[in-house]
Image (cartoon, one colour):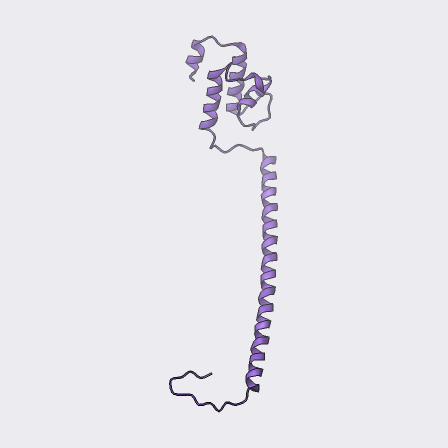
Amino acid sequence: MSSQTVEARKISKAELKFRDAFERLKAGKPDILPKGTPLSQNNVAKEAGVDPSALRRARFPELVADIQAWIEVHKDEATTKSPRQMMLAQRSRNRDLKEKVEALEEQRDKALGQLLDFQARILDLTLENHRLRAQLPESNVRYLSGSPKL
């Protein structure tokens, strides 16, 4: 809603407080709430110094529509976080990545151990196969040409 439309109709003191709070939150310069607080209908009411249930669509339909429209237009913008919040988020990401690396290393080590076990088993079976073939008696069977030999 444009400011001309707002000025054209009679505005209550409560709506003025809400609109001022809305403008402060849009500008990122709240008086009551901490800086970086996201803009929402409840936060507009809190910034105005009243209970969030006081800002209802039934009482202030244009203002609530303006707030919802602003939120919809700016929903994709990155929320500004304090340096401490960004540091904590980075620590959390680092911790998650370290845990993932540890899990992958454990998986790798387990797979490598299995590979070595399987290679040793293949070697044992190959040696046993050679030993058993050496023990076979010589066969007196003659193969016809074109027939496979064992």
